[in-house]
Image (cartoon, rainbow, N blue to C red):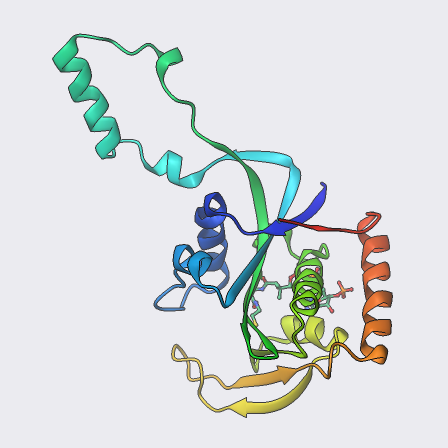
Length: 219
Ligand SMILES: CC(C)(COP(=O)(O)OP(=O)(O)OC[C@H]1O[C@@H](n2cnc3c(N)ncnc32)[C@H](O)[C@@H]1OP(=O)(O)O)[C@@H](O)C(=O)NCCC(=O)NCCS
Protein backbone atom coordinates (compact mmCIF):
# COMPACT_ATOMS: atom_id res chain seq x y z
CA UNK A 1 0.00 0.00 0.00
CA UNK A 2 1.30 3.46 -0.92
CA UNK A 3 0.20 6.36 1.20
CA UNK A 4 -0.64 9.56 -0.63
CA UNK A 5 -2.61 12.72 0.16
CA UNK A 6 -4.08 15.36 -2.11
CA UNK A 7 -6.75 18.03 -2.13
CA UNK A 8 -10.24 16.60 -2.67
CA UNK A 9 -11.51 16.75 -6.26
CA UNK A 10 -14.98 16.50 -7.74
CA UNK A 11 -14.43 12.88 -8.73
CA UNK A 12 -13.62 11.98 -5.10
CA UNK A 13 -16.96 13.15 -3.74
CA UNK A 14 -18.85 9.83 -4.07
CA UNK A 15 -16.16 7.89 -2.21
CA UNK A 16 -15.78 10.59 0.43
CA UNK A 17 -19.56 10.55 1.02
CA UNK A 18 -19.39 6.76 1.34
CA UNK A 19 -16.64 7.01 4.00
CA UNK A 20 -18.58 9.73 5.79
CA UNK A 21 -21.74 7.55 5.93
CA UNK A 22 -19.77 4.62 7.30
CA UNK A 23 -18.06 6.75 9.97
CA UNK A 24 -21.03 8.93 10.98
CA UNK A 25 -24.16 6.84 10.25
CA UNK A 26 -26.44 8.90 12.50
CA UNK A 27 -25.44 12.31 11.19
CA UNK A 28 -28.39 14.03 9.54
CA UNK A 29 -28.35 15.76 7.18
CA UNK A 30 -25.08 14.38 5.78
CA UNK A 31 -22.57 16.96 4.55
CA UNK A 32 -22.93 18.12 0.97
CA UNK A 33 -19.38 17.62 -0.33
CA UNK A 34 -20.18 19.02 -3.78
CA UNK A 35 -21.20 22.21 -2.04
CA UNK A 36 -18.11 22.10 0.16
CA UNK A 37 -15.90 22.05 -2.94
CA UNK A 38 -17.38 25.41 -3.90
CA UNK A 39 -17.17 26.80 -0.37
CA UNK A 40 -14.17 29.12 -0.22
CA UNK A 41 -13.84 28.66 3.54
CA UNK A 42 -13.69 24.86 3.27
CA UNK A 43 -10.58 22.79 2.59
CA UNK A 44 -10.66 19.04 2.12
CA UNK A 45 -7.79 16.58 1.83
CA UNK A 46 -8.13 12.91 0.89
CA UNK A 47 -5.77 10.00 1.53
CA UNK A 48 -5.58 7.37 -1.17
CA UNK A 49 -3.87 4.11 -1.95
CA UNK A 50 -1.90 4.69 -5.11
CA UNK A 51 -1.72 0.97 -5.87
CA UNK A 52 -5.49 0.48 -5.90
CA UNK A 53 -7.85 1.81 -8.56
CA UNK A 54 -11.64 1.58 -8.55
CA UNK A 55 -14.57 2.41 -10.77
CA UNK A 56 -16.17 5.61 -9.63
CA UNK A 57 -19.17 4.64 -7.44
CA UNK A 58 -21.47 7.13 -9.21
CA UNK A 59 -20.60 5.59 -12.57
CA UNK A 60 -21.69 2.14 -11.34
CA UNK A 61 -24.85 3.53 -9.80
CA UNK A 62 -25.83 5.17 -13.04
CA UNK A 63 -26.75 1.99 -14.94
CA UNK A 64 -30.40 2.32 -15.81
CA UNK A 65 -30.10 6.07 -15.48
CA UNK A 66 -31.56 8.64 -17.85
CA UNK A 67 -28.41 8.52 -19.99
CA UNK A 68 -28.58 4.74 -20.43
CA UNK A 69 -32.25 4.97 -21.34
CA UNK A 70 -31.49 7.73 -23.84
CA UNK A 71 -28.75 5.60 -25.49
CA UNK A 72 -31.15 2.66 -25.82
CA UNK A 73 -33.85 4.93 -27.32
CA UNK A 74 -31.31 6.28 -29.87
CA UNK A 75 -30.37 2.70 -30.81
CA UNK A 76 -34.06 1.92 -31.41
CA UNK A 77 -34.49 5.07 -33.52
CA UNK A 78 -31.38 4.67 -35.68
CA UNK A 79 -31.05 0.86 -35.66
CA UNK A 80 -27.45 1.17 -34.54
CA UNK A 81 -26.35 -1.50 -32.12
CA UNK A 82 -23.59 -0.12 -29.98
CA UNK A 83 -20.96 -2.80 -29.60
CA UNK A 84 -19.28 -3.03 -26.22
CA UNK A 85 -16.19 -1.26 -27.60
CA UNK A 86 -18.36 1.79 -28.37
CA UNK A 87 -19.52 2.05 -24.79
CA UNK A 88 -17.61 4.58 -22.72
CA UNK A 89 -15.67 2.80 -20.00
CA UNK A 90 -16.48 3.90 -16.46
CA UNK A 91 -14.02 6.39 -15.00
CA UNK A 92 -11.26 4.74 -12.98
CA UNK A 93 -10.27 6.56 -9.83
CA UNK A 94 -7.82 6.27 -6.97
CA UNK A 95 -9.17 4.35 -4.01
CA UNK A 96 -9.83 6.91 -1.29
CA UNK A 97 -9.06 5.57 2.21
CA UNK A 98 -9.94 8.61 4.30
CA UNK A 99 -10.53 12.33 4.32
CA UNK A 100 -10.28 15.40 6.50
CA UNK A 101 -12.04 18.73 6.13
CA UNK A 102 -11.62 22.06 7.84
CA UNK A 103 -13.03 25.54 7.61
CA UNK A 104 -10.90 28.65 7.91
CA UNK A 105 -12.51 31.48 9.85
CA UNK A 106 -10.21 34.44 10.50
CA UNK A 107 -7.09 32.97 12.13
CA UNK A 108 -8.75 29.69 13.13
CA UNK A 109 -8.87 26.40 11.22
CA UNK A 110 -11.83 24.36 12.49
CA UNK A 111 -11.72 20.67 11.64
CA UNK A 112 -15.25 19.74 10.57
CA UNK A 113 -14.63 16.08 9.86
CA UNK A 114 -11.98 13.39 9.74
CA UNK A 115 -12.63 9.74 8.93
CA UNK A 116 -10.84 6.65 7.68
CA UNK A 117 -12.49 3.60 6.09
CA UNK A 118 -13.07 1.02 8.82
CA UNK A 119 -10.96 -1.59 7.04
CA UNK A 120 -8.02 0.85 6.86
CA UNK A 121 -7.97 2.09 10.44
CA UNK A 122 -5.00 1.78 12.80
CA UNK A 123 -2.45 2.06 10.02
CA UNK A 124 -1.56 5.71 10.51
CA UNK A 125 -3.89 7.16 7.87
CA UNK A 126 -5.90 9.23 10.37
CA UNK A 127 -2.66 10.69 11.68
CA UNK A 128 -1.40 11.39 8.16
CA UNK A 129 -4.64 13.23 7.39
CA UNK A 130 -4.51 15.29 10.57
CA UNK A 131 -0.88 16.15 9.91
CA UNK A 132 -1.65 17.17 6.31
CA UNK A 133 -4.60 19.31 7.43
CA UNK A 134 -2.49 21.06 10.07
CA UNK A 135 0.30 21.58 7.55
CA UNK A 136 -2.18 23.11 5.13
CA UNK A 137 -3.67 25.26 7.92
CA UNK A 138 -0.18 26.57 8.67
CA UNK A 139 0.34 27.40 5.03
CA UNK A 140 -2.95 29.31 5.11
CA UNK A 141 -1.51 31.32 8.03
CA UNK A 142 -4.06 30.29 10.62
CA UNK A 143 -3.01 30.52 14.26
CA UNK A 144 -4.97 27.80 16.00
CA UNK A 145 -6.72 24.58 15.02
CA UNK A 146 -9.96 23.65 16.81
CA UNK A 147 -12.49 20.82 16.66
CA UNK A 148 -15.33 19.11 18.48
CA UNK A 149 -15.24 15.44 19.42
CA UNK A 150 -17.71 13.13 21.14
CA UNK A 151 -16.90 12.70 24.83
CA UNK A 152 -16.84 8.91 24.29
CA UNK A 153 -14.58 8.99 21.21
CA UNK A 154 -11.32 8.17 22.93
CA UNK A 155 -9.72 6.86 19.70
CA UNK A 156 -9.95 10.28 18.05
CA UNK A 157 -9.08 12.10 21.29
CA UNK A 158 -5.86 10.07 21.63
CA UNK A 159 -4.87 11.21 18.14
CA UNK A 160 -5.67 14.86 18.89
CA UNK A 161 -3.79 14.81 22.21
CA UNK A 162 -0.66 13.65 20.37
CA UNK A 163 -0.92 16.74 18.15
CA UNK A 164 -1.10 19.17 21.05
CA UNK A 165 -4.87 19.62 21.23
CA UNK A 166 -6.21 20.25 24.72
CA UNK A 167 -9.75 20.43 26.00
CA UNK A 168 -10.94 24.03 26.14
CA UNK A 169 -14.67 23.56 26.65
CA UNK A 170 -17.72 21.29 26.57
CA UNK A 171 -20.94 21.60 24.57
CA UNK A 172 -23.56 19.80 26.62
CA UNK A 173 -25.85 17.46 24.64
CA UNK A 174 -24.34 18.67 21.36
CA UNK A 175 -24.95 15.47 19.35
CA UNK A 176 -28.61 15.14 18.50
CA UNK A 177 -28.72 11.33 18.10
CA UNK A 178 -27.92 10.51 21.75
CA UNK A 179 -27.52 13.94 23.36
CA UNK A 180 -23.85 13.19 23.98
CA UNK A 181 -21.56 16.04 25.00
CA UNK A 182 -18.94 17.40 22.62
CA UNK A 183 -15.51 18.26 23.93
CA UNK A 184 -14.12 21.39 22.32
CA UNK A 185 -10.39 21.00 21.70
CA UNK A 186 -7.83 23.49 20.49
CA UNK A 187 -4.13 23.72 19.78
CA UNK A 188 -1.90 26.48 21.06
CA UNK A 189 -0.41 28.90 18.50
CA UNK A 190 0.66 26.60 15.66
CA UNK A 191 3.13 29.18 14.37
CA UNK A 192 5.09 29.22 17.65
CA UNK A 193 8.63 27.83 17.52
CA UNK A 194 7.84 25.24 20.20
CA UNK A 195 4.81 23.92 18.31
CA UNK A 196 6.66 23.82 15.00
CA UNK A 197 9.51 21.86 16.56
CA UNK A 198 7.15 19.27 18.04
CA UNK A 199 5.22 19.11 14.76
CA UNK A 200 8.38 18.38 12.76
CA UNK A 201 9.26 15.56 15.19
CA UNK A 202 5.79 14.04 14.79
CA UNK A 203 6.03 14.30 11.00
CA UNK A 204 9.37 12.50 10.98
CA UNK A 205 8.08 9.78 13.32
CA UNK A 206 5.01 9.16 11.16
CA UNK A 207 7.02 9.08 7.92
CA UNK A 208 9.25 6.46 9.53
CA UNK A 209 6.26 4.44 10.73
CA UNK A 210 4.65 4.51 7.28
CA UNK A 211 7.94 3.86 5.51
CA UNK A 212 7.66 6.99 3.38
CA UNK A 213 10.29 9.65 2.82
CA UNK A 214 7.73 12.35 3.55
CA UNK A 215 4.63 13.59 1.87
CA UNK A 216 3.39 16.43 -0.22
CA UNK A 217 -0.19 17.53 -0.55
CA UNK A 218 -0.74 17.20 -4.28
CA UNK A 219 -3.08 19.91 -5.59
C1 LIG B 1 -10.41 8.70 14.45
C2 LIG B 1 -9.91 8.03 13.17
C3 LIG B 1 -9.97 9.04 12.04
C4 LIG B 1 -8.45 7.59 13.39
O1 LIG B 1 -7.97 7.07 12.15
P1 LIG B 1 -6.90 5.88 12.08
O2 LIG B 1 -6.35 5.85 10.73
O3 LIG B 1 -7.47 4.63 12.62
O4 LIG B 1 -5.82 6.42 13.15
P2 LIG B 1 -4.25 6.12 13.18
O5 LIG B 1 -3.97 4.71 12.80
O6 LIG B 1 -3.55 7.19 12.43
O7 LIG B 1 -3.98 6.30 14.72
C5 LIG B 1 -3.31 7.44 15.25
C6 LIG B 1 -3.46 7.43 16.75
O8 LIG B 1 -4.83 7.64 17.14
C7 LIG B 1 -5.12 6.87 18.32
N1 LIG B 1 -6.09 5.83 17.98
C8 LIG B 1 -6.59 5.55 16.76
N2 LIG B 1 -7.50 4.55 16.85
C9 LIG B 1 -7.56 4.21 18.15
C10 LIG B 1 -8.34 3.26 18.86
N3 LIG B 1 -9.21 2.45 18.26
N4 LIG B 1 -8.17 3.19 20.21
C11 LIG B 1 -7.31 3.98 20.85
N5 LIG B 1 -6.53 4.93 20.22
C12 LIG B 1 -6.67 5.03 18.89
C13 LIG B 1 -3.81 6.23 18.74
O9 LIG B 1 -3.15 7.15 19.59
C14 LIG B 1 -3.09 6.12 17.41
O10 LIG B 1 -1.70 6.03 17.52
P3 LIG B 1 -0.98 4.59 17.67
O11 LIG B 1 -1.49 3.75 16.54
O12 LIG B 1 0.47 4.93 17.55
O13 LIG B 1 -1.41 4.05 19.01
C15 LIG B 1 -10.75 6.75 12.84
O14 LIG B 1 -10.83 5.95 14.00
C16 LIG B 1 -12.16 7.04 12.34
O15 LIG B 1 -12.39 7.25 11.15
N6 LIG B 1 -13.14 7.03 13.25
C17 LIG B 1 -14.54 7.28 12.87
C18 LIG B 1 -14.75 8.73 12.58
C19 LIG B 1 -14.41 9.61 13.78
O16 LIG B 1 -14.72 9.29 14.92
N7 LIG B 1 -13.77 10.75 13.49
C20 LIG B 1 -13.42 11.72 14.50
C21 LIG B 1 -14.52 12.71 14.64
S1 LIG B 1 -14.08 14.00 15.79
